[in-house]
Image: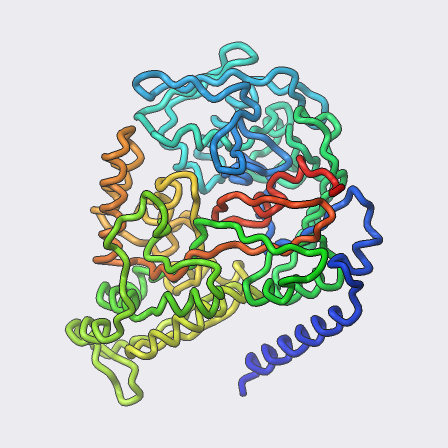
Length: 533
């Protein structure tokens, strides 16, 4: 037994003991003793990850629903766009190149200063500035210019008809009078933001929690939940333990841990449909993962159905690309069978021959590579282990390693990662930063350094056309190219599971992106909650 294995067993044993102890000590009714100590208008939830920044200028809240800020538009429960800082949906010119927004009147930032069109212009121009460290800048590639027409009107002019542009305007608006007087990348605004949203940040203890209070001047009315805390608990087992002990009102949990709360009085489990996928990056710069034959073989070797049944316990579906199979954008016929026999034939034909231990080699190169996953994330760990097991059956050795993102990120160019992504808003959001060759090396964009000219061309066609049929054909091309040369092995699309106490009544969820817990979950509309009667 290695030291690492011993530490892992010790951690698992300790976590199990903590869960058992908490289960024995918590009060019945789903709240636990600690829950009764919290104020009636206070909510504490457990999340798995925290943001790197709280500045929308650097990418925070770009998909909307950030609580501190508002965008011009927002999403309702069915993910339809509705006005937020805008008074109405935009007026779009017949050629699709001009979007005009009339702004809501009387809105103020949490410091009391008025919100105007100048703040909108400042936000978008700052994000487009190459000096701003926003890895999602290319999402606004279609934008040629943004102009204020007085204090209450903003006009966006596009370079080309970009069909989902209105979806991009859920992006939070920053105050020019605060953020414009600081270094955009390092100023205090990145950790002490000021916005127009329903909540105001009161404290951020990195690695521990984010604390918010209700904004009494919120244009939508002061929320009934006066204090909202997001406890950052990266380890799934510990999050479940703290929920069981009553320290949390709710939490996001993997299926195997959520199952332990099923049927418990005073708690409800919510399953949110999502575009969230888990995949394995296959870096182009590695001698093994960069080989197309290896990529194709792994795509066929993986048993996605078993992953859904055993790891997700049915809370999800097989993934064959970034688009879920039940989406109208999915390209029919791109499903891949579980076919290890064909996978072996592909490797044989490519010159990867089994060695004495069953692991293949070619030209002295062993078919072996590391696969990293995020420490404490049980779903990623279980996906990684299952993937490695399936790979071994066709003669490919995968060594799984756990680490923090700080440890993983410097290795991404050469080493595989159990990653995730997905956005329900539009296929451009799902695919461009994931697959475009120009995005490689930009933070967590195109982590596999995938480069396929046919895909690059189709991605541009998809984002530059306003015609639905043209866009559908383009994204079908992308998905079919991924069958021929998959730079990633897509494994599953995951339903997000949340366990919540019932004191705020019956809650709802939205269709969620990959990023969950911060802006998603049953607390997506916490500003609208009312105490249960």
